[in-house]
Length: 125
Figure 1 (cartoon, one colour):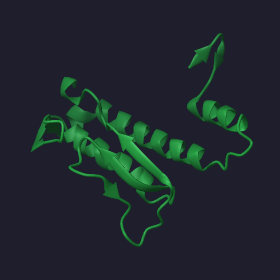
Figure 2 (cartoon, helix red, strand yellow):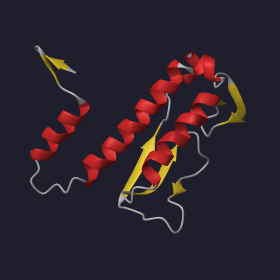
Figure 3 (tube, one colour):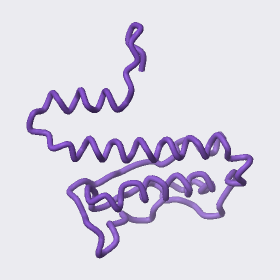
Figure 4 (cartoon, one colour):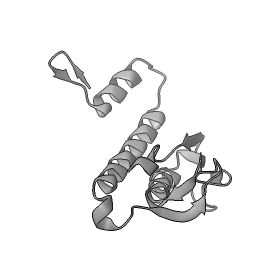
């Protein structure tokens, strides 16, 4: 985001917001960084989708009744993998899943629940 001539990155914004809350542990900030990393990975694949053969329908229907796209499934798994093994999240849920997905047993579970639409508007790509 550009404010005047100053560029404010997502990292800077998160850090500034965390400083406003002296009681903050940084756990939420780290979870937001995990989600940002997933978004960057997804963005890269969306830009290369035609070359990587991940365009088109995957053949299944999600809980919203939409035909799942290959990119939807890739994005869904990317977000889940980015947050499930950090010890910050206990469960995730998205419109691509039939039900909430808990962190795998034997892996550390945190206190946060992440609800997301992994790639809104993928049928437009």
